[in-house]
Length: 115
Image (cartoon, rainbow, N blue to C red; front, side):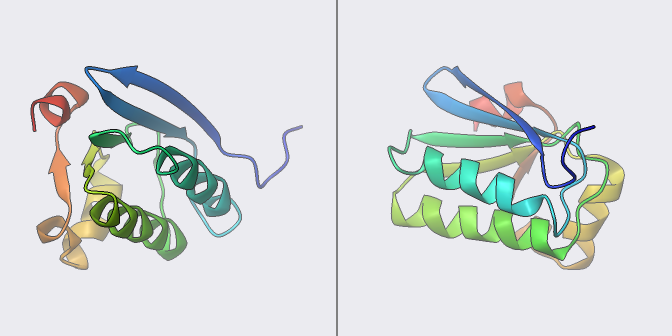
């Protein structure tokens, strides 16, 4: 049985962008894994970082805070951060908090790459 704190995250590079794909719920026990992966990306930041969220069915405030930290890191490194492929449930959290007006959110990876 996998450790509850494990969050599977795949990495991909496409058209000069780094694409992170977390798989599973991003909650208090799992957000540190996402945070660590994001920090690794920004050690040598690409021009664009895409966080593809189609496999995240639930995200709590710690997951949102992790993505806010990613946005801060992207601004410091002059990299573009794009979130994409959000489920309705996750998007509603961003919408309620009005973070949909702060983050660049696109419907899929292709649209995020075109950003």
